[in-house]
Image (tube, rainbow, N blue to C red; front, side):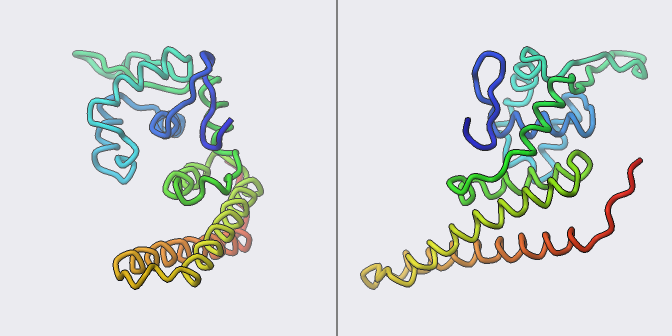
Length: 196
């Protein structure tokens, strides 16, 4: 099984969008309209393949028994369907959050790894968050070191644009690595959260 992907009962892997959609529903049961607004107005929208992808994804997650819709009793006219996680959906989301970062995916899925971290705050114990961040940092360190070695060795035949693009990649991954190190230090020094 590849990192960031869990197989559903039919053996199909959930997409990044489906994982994020499931995570959003696990943290805050919502109607389709509410979810549409979240994806339209927040950075989470980069994971939505198209504006028409939301409702088919909700139906797929419902068929997989990962979410369940219920009518909102507070609505007097036309009740809206509010999606909440099933026990299986909550377990699938927690398993996705807990997967360590595979070095092969660290650059390609950088934003997705950060989204997983963001979703962990009230879902995963601090010790597991730190383990996740350590795997993220280690994968980033290896990738960045390889990129720096390639940059130092590459002549790129005097071409300016490829050299500048490579410098951007090095700078982005160095910044992400610094962020991971700082975040590990911050979370390690912070008082543990109080259980509610």
